[in-house]
Image (tube, rainbow, N blue to C red; front, side, top):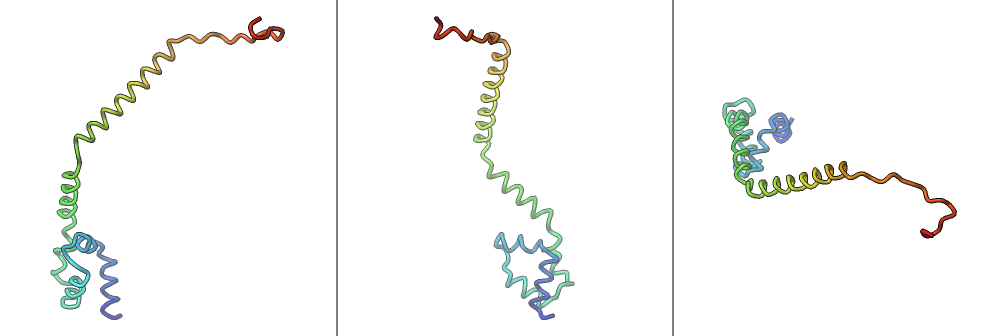
Length: 112
């Protein structure tokens, strides 16, 4: 196998490298150069392959910072109002007695 195919196989076996390329901290060229210099079994990769928990916690914190709590609260209040309307409708519907259906005689037209 040539170096490019070995590198592709290395990336397939270590998908954590994709996160670093997507967030812009490294490029594929950087990783390929490290792979060519040191190979796949070097301690150079420990920073990139074992750092999944701290990276995911940073991603979670940045996601939480982007949440607008006021809009969530207004959405919850809207849902509560809608549920209140449904509850009122359901409670009023059961208390109203429906008149029993009485078929109109066949000989009677337009309330004669």
